[in-house]
Image (cartoon, rainbow, N blue to C red):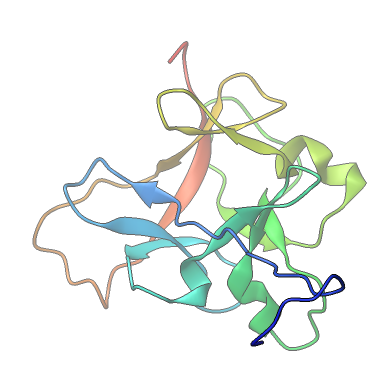
Length: 151
Protein backbone atom coordinates (compact mmCIF):
# COMPACT_ATOMS: atom_id res chain seq x y z
CA UNK A 1 0.00 0.00 0.00
CA UNK A 2 2.57 2.51 -1.16
CA UNK A 3 0.14 4.73 -3.06
CA UNK A 4 -3.45 5.66 -2.39
CA UNK A 5 -5.42 6.11 -5.58
CA UNK A 6 -8.90 7.44 -6.03
CA UNK A 7 -10.30 3.89 -5.72
CA UNK A 8 -8.33 2.89 -2.61
CA UNK A 9 -9.95 2.95 0.81
CA UNK A 10 -8.46 2.82 4.26
CA UNK A 11 -10.71 1.28 6.90
CA UNK A 12 -10.14 1.89 10.58
CA UNK A 13 -11.89 -0.35 13.11
CA UNK A 14 -12.52 1.44 16.39
CA UNK A 15 -12.54 -1.38 18.96
CA UNK A 16 -12.57 -0.68 22.71
CA UNK A 17 -12.50 -2.43 26.08
CA UNK A 18 -15.49 -2.35 28.44
CA UNK A 19 -13.79 -1.79 31.79
CA UNK A 20 -14.91 -2.15 35.40
CA UNK A 21 -13.43 0.61 37.56
CA UNK A 22 -14.70 -0.28 41.02
CA UNK A 23 -12.04 -2.76 42.13
CA UNK A 24 -8.83 -0.76 41.74
CA UNK A 25 -7.82 -3.31 39.10
CA UNK A 26 -7.76 -3.29 35.32
CA UNK A 27 -10.79 -5.57 34.77
CA UNK A 28 -12.73 -5.82 31.49
CA UNK A 29 -15.54 -7.79 29.89
CA UNK A 30 -14.12 -10.89 28.25
CA UNK A 31 -15.46 -13.91 26.35
CA UNK A 32 -12.56 -16.38 26.61
CA UNK A 33 -14.55 -19.31 25.20
CA UNK A 34 -18.05 -19.96 23.96
CA UNK A 35 -20.60 -17.18 24.47
CA UNK A 36 -20.44 -16.55 28.23
CA UNK A 37 -19.32 -13.02 29.18
CA UNK A 38 -17.01 -12.84 32.21
CA UNK A 39 -14.86 -10.34 34.02
CA UNK A 40 -11.07 -10.71 33.64
CA UNK A 41 -7.81 -8.83 33.92
CA UNK A 42 -7.17 -6.76 30.77
CA UNK A 43 -4.78 -8.38 28.28
CA UNK A 44 -3.50 -5.93 25.66
CA UNK A 45 -4.40 -7.08 22.16
CA UNK A 46 -6.69 -9.93 23.25
CA UNK A 47 -9.51 -10.04 20.69
CA UNK A 48 -11.74 -11.82 23.22
CA UNK A 49 -11.84 -8.53 25.18
CA UNK A 50 -12.46 -6.11 22.29
CA UNK A 51 -15.86 -4.60 21.43
CA UNK A 52 -17.31 -2.05 19.02
CA UNK A 53 -20.67 -0.43 18.37
CA UNK A 54 -22.01 -1.32 14.92
CA UNK A 55 -24.14 0.88 12.66
CA UNK A 56 -27.34 -0.52 14.24
CA UNK A 57 -26.21 0.48 17.75
CA UNK A 58 -25.46 -3.08 18.88
CA UNK A 59 -22.27 -3.83 20.82
CA UNK A 60 -20.36 -6.40 18.75
CA UNK A 61 -17.71 -8.70 20.15
CA UNK A 62 -14.56 -8.81 18.02
CA UNK A 63 -13.40 -12.24 19.20
CA UNK A 64 -16.66 -13.96 18.26
CA UNK A 65 -15.50 -14.02 14.66
CA UNK A 66 -12.91 -16.57 15.82
CA UNK A 67 -15.61 -19.09 16.86
CA UNK A 68 -16.26 -22.02 14.52
CA UNK A 69 -19.26 -21.51 12.23
CA UNK A 70 -19.66 -17.81 13.06
CA UNK A 71 -19.68 -15.53 10.01
CA UNK A 72 -20.99 -12.27 11.48
CA UNK A 73 -19.90 -10.96 14.89
CA UNK A 74 -22.08 -11.82 17.88
CA UNK A 75 -23.53 -9.03 20.05
CA UNK A 76 -23.91 -8.37 23.76
CA UNK A 77 -27.18 -9.72 25.17
CA UNK A 78 -28.62 -11.22 28.34
CA UNK A 79 -29.19 -14.93 28.95
CA UNK A 80 -32.83 -15.93 29.08
CA UNK A 81 -35.85 -14.01 27.89
CA UNK A 82 -37.97 -12.78 30.81
CA UNK A 83 -36.19 -10.18 32.93
CA UNK A 84 -37.37 -9.90 36.53
CA UNK A 85 -36.85 -6.88 38.84
CA UNK A 86 -33.92 -7.23 41.27
CA UNK A 87 -32.73 -10.43 39.58
CA UNK A 88 -29.23 -10.95 38.22
CA UNK A 89 -29.11 -12.29 34.68
CA UNK A 90 -25.80 -13.37 33.09
CA UNK A 91 -24.53 -11.61 30.01
CA UNK A 92 -23.80 -13.60 26.88
CA UNK A 93 -23.22 -13.25 23.16
CA UNK A 94 -25.95 -13.93 20.62
CA UNK A 95 -26.61 -13.41 16.94
CA UNK A 96 -28.24 -10.03 16.25
CA UNK A 97 -32.00 -10.57 16.35
CA UNK A 98 -34.78 -7.98 15.94
CA UNK A 99 -36.98 -9.96 18.35
CA UNK A 100 -34.31 -9.45 21.05
CA UNK A 101 -33.83 -5.75 20.35
CA UNK A 102 -34.90 -4.86 23.90
CA UNK A 103 -31.90 -6.69 25.38
CA UNK A 104 -29.37 -6.19 22.57
CA UNK A 105 -29.28 -2.39 22.52
CA UNK A 106 -26.93 -0.84 25.11
CA UNK A 107 -25.66 2.66 25.79
CA UNK A 108 -23.03 4.26 27.98
CA UNK A 109 -24.45 6.77 30.45
CA UNK A 110 -22.81 10.14 31.13
CA UNK A 111 -21.30 8.69 34.33
CA UNK A 112 -19.75 5.77 32.41
CA UNK A 113 -22.15 2.94 33.25
CA UNK A 114 -23.39 0.47 30.65
CA UNK A 115 -27.21 0.56 30.51
CA UNK A 116 -29.73 -1.35 28.46
CA UNK A 117 -31.25 1.25 26.13
CA UNK A 118 -34.83 0.02 26.46
CA UNK A 119 -35.05 -0.61 30.22
CA UNK A 120 -34.57 2.54 32.30
CA UNK A 121 -32.97 0.87 35.34
CA UNK A 122 -31.17 -2.10 33.80
CA UNK A 123 -27.40 -1.69 34.22
CA UNK A 124 -24.39 -3.99 33.89
CA UNK A 125 -22.65 -4.69 37.18
CA UNK A 126 -20.56 -7.42 38.74
CA UNK A 127 -22.64 -9.91 40.71
CA UNK A 128 -19.94 -10.64 43.29
CA UNK A 129 -17.50 -8.45 45.16
CA UNK A 130 -13.77 -8.34 44.57
CA UNK A 131 -10.82 -8.70 46.87
CA UNK A 132 -7.29 -7.58 46.02
CA UNK A 133 -5.80 -11.05 46.49
CA UNK A 134 -7.92 -13.29 44.24
CA UNK A 135 -6.15 -15.45 41.71
CA UNK A 136 -6.70 -13.96 38.24
CA UNK A 137 -6.44 -17.32 36.48
CA UNK A 138 -8.92 -19.10 38.75
CA UNK A 139 -11.68 -16.53 39.26
CA UNK A 140 -14.04 -15.40 36.53
CA UNK A 141 -16.90 -13.27 37.82
CA UNK A 142 -19.88 -13.07 35.50
CA UNK A 143 -21.21 -9.62 34.69
CA UNK A 144 -24.90 -9.16 35.08
CA UNK A 145 -27.46 -6.51 34.30
CA UNK A 146 -29.62 -5.80 37.32
CA UNK A 147 -32.71 -3.83 38.13
CA UNK A 148 -31.35 -0.85 40.04
CA UNK A 149 -33.25 1.72 42.04
CA UNK A 150 -33.03 5.28 40.72
CA UNK A 151 -29.24 5.22 40.30
